[in-house]
Length: 432
Image (cartoon, rainbow, N blue to C red; front, side, top):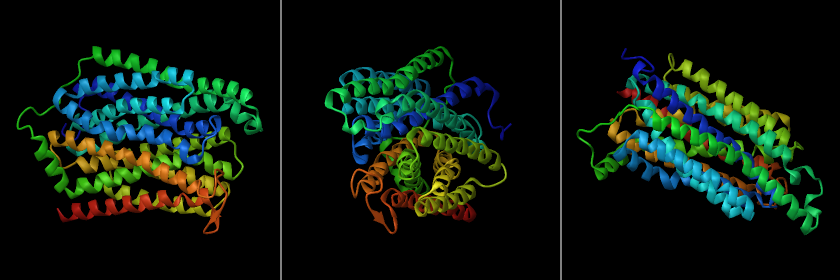
């Protein structure tokens, strides 16, 4: 019983909370193609369009700590409900944003939406870890995270079939040369197309809010010997495993968002349309899903830190091959990175919190969710590298390759750090 993955009494709550992983996966997948969509519709530079990711992942950074403090005081269920409410509000802000046709308004909607996602991730991840034995906690979280790529795949299908294919600005070859009046009509129609998936997910969020509100959820919370907040932060800062883990999470999320966001710019450089590029991203998500499923099984036999190290090496090698090849081979390597990224978020998360008690884990979860800010900062940096010679993706060459190819040096460096983290944990485990 001690090594049981999911205790029977937690089955229904586990199912409901696990579904949340798909809901924020959907938001991630729908948003990634929007960088290219807004770039085309509103005629933005790569760096300007990357403000979509700055707003989306910046919301995590701003709200993760307040979310952790709220959950610590009010419990997991209220944290989930507040997260769903904020998700709903942010998604529905796309309605006035499309009406006013203001880029900043869309970014505001994403910012508020990710306040909700920050609550959900800060709550759901430690909740899953707490639903059973500590010995199976990391494997349990990897199992729950299997549903994240299900949401990713669904979100990408929606983005491809109902957004990218229906954007007039992307399907008209001479869009940039049209007169102001024609552009205005196309822009209005396209912004409505961008709005619709967010309004639809808002309805699904409302349904889950009602379901969880009506369900009796277990109270898994240490009421005795509750840590003082100041003492808790002090203990976390002194914990090298935790500090290293937060850094690894920053670089992992940065690598993930760069590889998924700029797949469209990479495709543009080798003459592939946005709609076709979405097919490659779909394959990347399938690899992500299959890698996570495989790793959940392999963790029965291979220590999670060792698997993390192996996959960091694989991610690094694929990133280097992506940089060096301006061809379909480079695209294959780019989508291959997703397989090696598959186990990283839940594994880094679980390893970082493994030796912390439950109350300290709630505070520590905030730092690991705040680390998602890597997805806001690094795409901005990559966008600036791509814009170095101009708004096109291949204005200049750097070290013999186009600027968009060279920009994938950033994910390669991220995987080097993650490898260092995995090696550190292995040595720490051997010493103990």
